[in-house]
Image 1 (tube, helix red, strand yellow):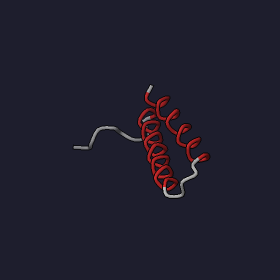
Image 2 (cartoon, rainbow, N blue to C red):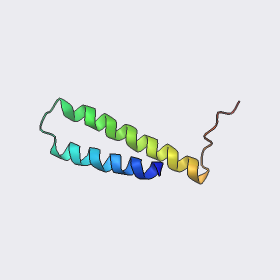
Image 3 (cartoon, rainbow, N blue to C red):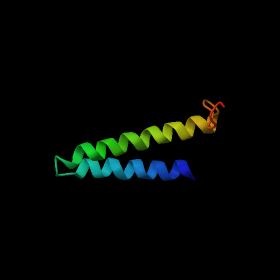
Image 4 (cartoon, one colour):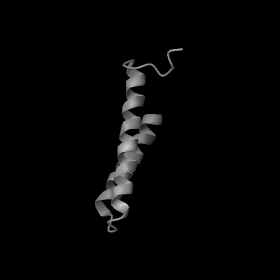
Length: 57
């Protein structure tokens, strides 16, 4: 479920980025998009066992 929400958020941010007219707003949307993509990558890596979600201590 979390991955679906992140994928939807990424698509919304991409659409927003494509339609943004305010040059000052563009960098903020790009940052939000990169953060959402990074979060999705972590969630997927946790799901497939590539990384552990728990701290090592």
